[in-house]
Image 1 (tube, protein in one colour):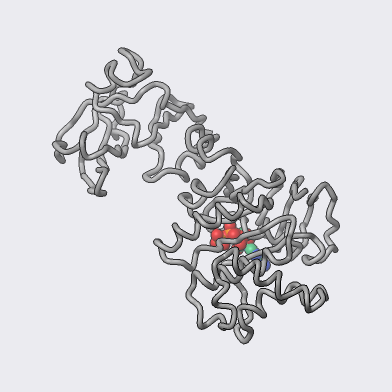
Image 2 (cartoon, helix red, strand yellow; image 1 turned 180 degrees about the vertical axis):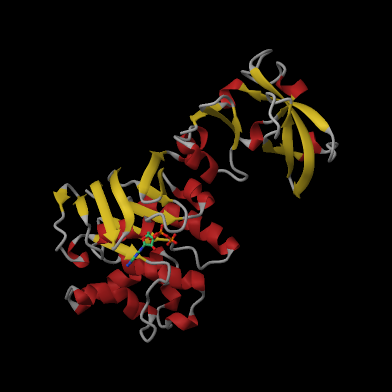
Length: 344
Ligand code: ATP
């Protein structure tokens, strides 16, 4: 049972608070993604769970047991894969994968079959004689994962394991990793600052900022119902539009929720007459993204403000084909797509 829980977990380095009181529960078999900008404390949180860093305060439970800060990494039932893979350069792929078993004094006869099984799982059975520098980035990553799997851990801790791969390989590797994790059902914590990766991989996502977890939820929950303006603007590309509503409140809506006024008027499910916010968007610039176009513009007649709020609309080409820079167009945003945030 690989449930992991942290309670009030905190880490200070001198004057810097890297992790600021994190309460998080990762269920047995779940893949939880820690997502957040550079420096928000993701790696530090993982290193504390792994036993590579001692917490300043708080508690860590692995498989129901309170883990004493003195318990070394290898005794925690966790396997960590780093961004750099941390393979031994002078050892073959076989020896790299076998290493954790040798370190645990597994009998030699039992080692080879387990290495081969892990290698087969990741499709690197034919590469076991090679050293890391004779392998591609993707192959090295698989050796690192095989080395983690061979220990049969209760928990995987993966810190940006795909960040060294090019975009194409990354998408394939992500898909493989997800399938593999579902298949073996090992509890996994996965660190990334890439929201696409987080949305694609996570059963749930914990969004972090400045040492704190701002929201935990399924990809759809954090995208559709962000808890605050940080989450709202960290997820989504381009991010959610935020415009003044009244003194205390900001109104948020996503760029893909701009509907041409005629369309929103009854033809869109759930958005009948009056069931939408009417807007006039003056388009300043158009960006071509292939299937979609981004319209950068301002909202006209939005209260009586000196500065009209800037927004971005994302429209499929079928709708945006005739839109021109400099013109104003009526749009509607369905009420169910509107979100309100406390400015404070
Ligand atoms: P990235 O995505 O860039 O890897 P991260 O979210 O993993 O970032 P951490 O590496 O956990 O962030 O760092 C969190 C904060 O703690 C940062 O401000 C960092 O500078 C600081 N920090 C991390 N490790 C140490 C250390 N050993 N000594 C001092 N400060 C540290």
